Image (tube, rainbow, N blue to C red; front, side, top):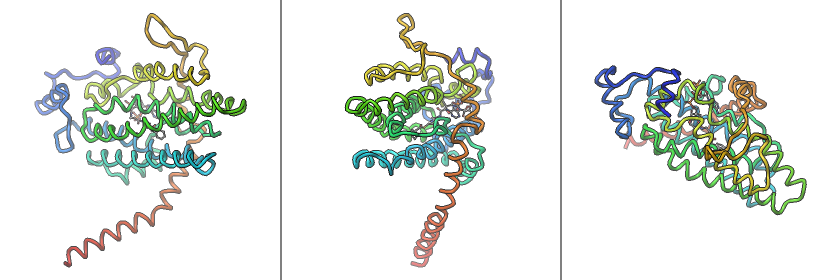
Length: 330
Ligand code: FAQ
């Protein structure tokens, strides 16, 4: 796949013998599956690519709390409320580990958050869609966390040590989220009335295609893939991961007794994979440009939350200063 990506000419990569000695030693380490750590030499472009990807990932976790946070007060039972609160809190934790991993590369957390609030940083397209019904909580857990896991399991083997290690814990938690989402949907489908079952199908219809878009543009249109795969930041391509997600999700869809909003979704015996219909990339790029159904609302909510939390940050800094003064005086 890597050779194929390079052949597409998206980005020409250097051969080892074209590299300066330091860069060559770095690439040889990557080729030998040795992790790069924060204090190791790395090409500036490798550092910048990681800062870009990890900060986008962290922002996604934080903005990703909003669609589900929307339903905490309306969860139908105490058990469901507790599950949802724990899940949203886990996503906050993921954002924090990821910002910390990003800081090991010399990036400044406040600056990156300011870029997010200014609308200059990306976060996952999926979080710009609204959560309209309770069934959306099941579908977000099942499809959105499901897609996130397929992408992140591979990132446990990413070449940058702090990012790879953060992924291990994140994957364990996401896996739990995916199961609770699926169990919620099974309950609605098996024990629910007609209206509740229709609500599940409607949620799947709305989230199916946006979940497939989470993996990013197709390989031929992914400007960062060839270099990121050469550096083993990415271990599998966007299209490979999307296909894996579809292959593992369709049997779960069938078990629910639901369908996907894709008439072309069909098992292909020869390929050993499901075929699927064309993704509407124009919609994806519109969401990336800030024109999705909830982009403005999501950023505004984050800005207000950040401003409202200013007193907490000030209190923490004041307390730390006081402790330091006491320590110095003693
Ligand atoms: N949304 O050349 P590529 C979660 C951008 S976590 C928005 O293929 P790359 C947990 C991309 O940044 C979900 N933008 O880029 C949760 C690039 O723009 P740039 C987040 C997207 O980086 C669950 C441009 O398009 N997961 O869900 C998207 O090699 C439930 C060209 O694309 C991660 O971030 C998109 N979907 O591959 C939380 C995983 N796709 O920066 C709460 C880590 C692409 O050049 C509730 N990230 N773009 O201007 C990755 O694996 C990669 O960054 C990809 C994109 C695969 C997302």
